[in-house]
Image 1 (tube, one colour):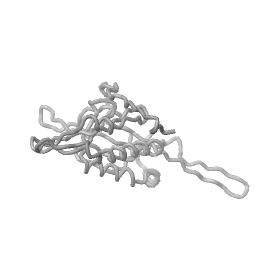
Image 2: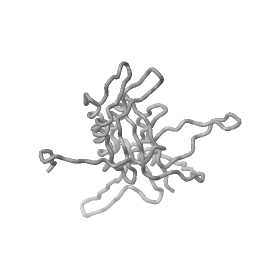
Image 3: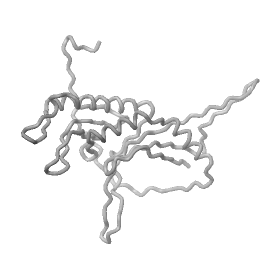
Image 4: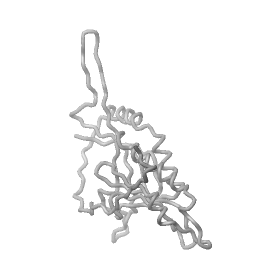
Amino acid sequence: MKQTIRYRILTIPKKISVDIRLVLNDTVSPEYRSNFDDGSNVSVRLSPFIGVNIIRPTERDEEGRSIRAPWNPNDSIGMTMFNLPIFIDNLHAIRESMKVPNLYSYVGKRLEINDKEAELARRVFTIGSTVVEFAPVVIESDENTRVEGIKVKFNNEDSSFLLTLNEMTSLYWNLSHMDPEGIAIKLYQMYVKQSDKKDTTQPTQKKYNTSVDIAPKAISFSDDELPF
């Protein structure tokens, strides 16, 4: 039986959570032991997943009871130690792009975004089978408050969320400073000490839109700017 152990790294309320997941199997040990003439060797192979998950608001049924929002497969991405740096690198790039002087301006007292500069700053990349987009936007928290931020999209508009500059900085810092492998070892130590393992059955899930509506980035270089 497979068991998933999670450790929550970060929660940005009502927007996203970040966790480290370790999937273990009762029948397949991550430990490999070998013997030789002068001794033995033990190696441990752990492959943690780093998940970024969209938080959906809870709903109410007819009797007023709180129920979880239906599951959407696009609402989360799972990264490995291989592609986590890709996510962090693009997040760093969009943070740096937000410093471009002409990206935002004020028309009177109203904050506006320069669409041309925003398109240049937009980042599009893939994590596994998921297309991810970071795009600068103006976030309206109410009629009188407009602030700089980004829209993050996983595959399509149905699975997107907004981050202010402070929230984006928090996400970048936490992803950059966490130790997934160290946490995975601790999770494994917890797992081997457990005696009771309960099987859980997931309910049948409805189908969601898994299409991609993110426009690809068109990159062009002048002769002086060729990267090779």
